[in-house]
Image: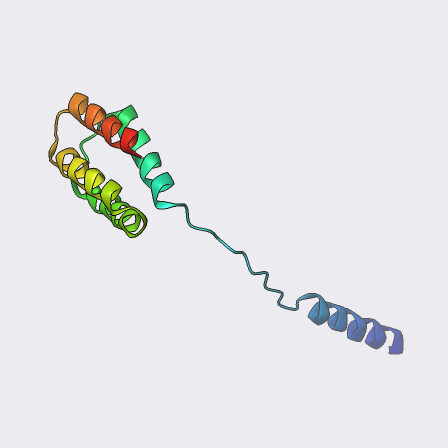
Length: 103
């Protein structure tokens, strides 16, 4: 019986020691607004899908660019308005490419 009790205590001790919480901090760096915008525009160039309400995501990227380069953001904003309004897949591709070229 003492061996069994010793074994049980040792097993429980190892179990609780081995289950300690260890949290590792993972630092995530968000992509630059230009990179995020370029990625979405590349997808539009490939698909030609009309943007619709997805334009809000692109607008956020343009606003982030505005903090660093207002003139560039103004040009992109004008192109974005045209892109959001476009429904023709061929024109979506053309306008997305024009916008990507401004980056």
